[in-house]
Image (cartoon, rainbow, N blue to C red; front, side, top):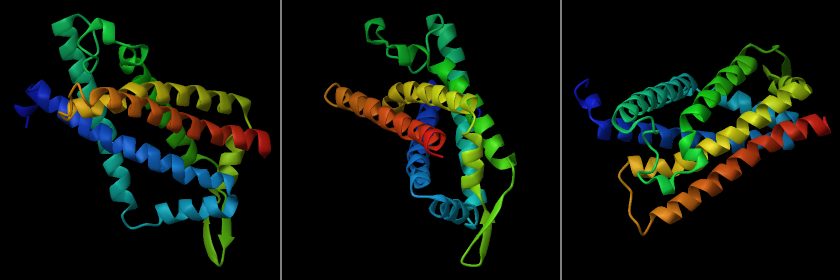
Length: 218
């Protein structure tokens, strides 16, 4: 295994594969959270369905593993790239004229996103525990907690800024996934890059709409 990790191709493949899993999770998480617009019962029932699922611990630790591997591969590739090319990000395009703000700041946005994810999970897991009952089933009132969190302008600002950087990271990272997995062809690359940007905008705006809705409506 250690011998395989010495290959930059293997590291890029692992980074692409874990990135693909995280991209899928992010989109699913965003769409699930849209239930905040439907109301407290829909949102809380959705949260209860996820956390009471027997497969939840396996999925949760699988995601932690994906993030850890993705970050580790990013660090190893960045270090390898710094040594070989003088500090450019490992998944950035080969030609300087093709580089973009998103590709040049992947390491920095990645660090900020990791910090954001950590603070978000901490707030949701260890935030005030409220309970609510629907049809005789007692569950955590996550809706109340979310409303409480997003009553603070500072929290809303932090979330919006972090999600903007998530969008920037995804705008380059999504298309880079396919390059890392070996799907790189002049005929398809422009379309893949376009899809990556569209996906990033949709995800960023989708997530941003939620704290803004809670702050201004509740």
